[in-house]
Length: 305
Picture 1: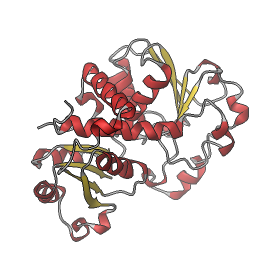
Picture 2 (picture 1 turned 120 degrees about the horizontal axis):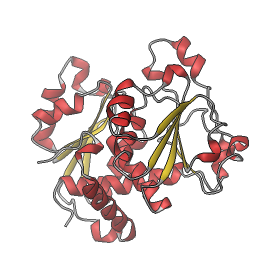
Picture 3 (picture 1 turned 180 degrees about the horizontal axis):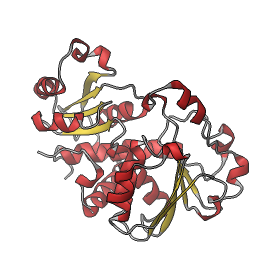
Picture 4 (picture 1 turned 180 degrees about the vertical axis):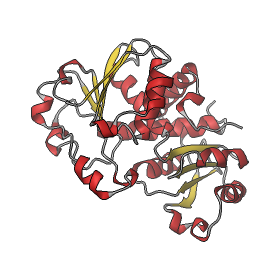
């Protein structure tokens, strides 16, 4: 039995195989429409979610399986004080695979250690979001043709942004990937990412405050929202929430083939006027997310072949 806690749980070769499977699912959905007949996915979401939870549920339904679960901690026995360890033991009796989101870092790992079924980390606090990273990798590879030889700018909340942390870890394994980190000083990438991932692996990167200054050199711009739920006080959130807003003027500074990604939801950080720009790929990103989660479910249930 295998779990997915981090994108690093899969080798580069395994990631390539997973993305190849997702591409095949996209091309020939009928071939996979009954692969999960009789199987059940549990979505245990202790935090609110639209895209990730519905993407998992849509993925399982399109594979012929069924779904059960809860959308908030308040609608589960966690509201009564039940531990994650006990919850997963119960879920293991009802379902064949589980996708778990939790506000506490490491909670899905605790669940995996007690589970009798595969557990997928669907986001744990400000730590990791591996299936969003799989989505990002598939989007980049599908639209750019490769995951190597590029400069990627990550903009916004780089301190608490679990999607950013997971993506940096994953992309560091590909050749000639350079990072530009764009954030206010308060939201810079954590020291452990800078030192243990980037510096340790001799990855080229720089940290800047102004987005305008680096737009012309980017092949990909990965925007993130400033997350209210990660702040300890409202005053800091209000001060930083509109620090970056991507608009037509900024897009005019970028390469003609630059690609804009966003894990969504967005608030104010991308103006709606950018949606019509052919370089805006964040809604295509959502679709790729469903296919890669279909591939992941099949792989963890050993139903891919």
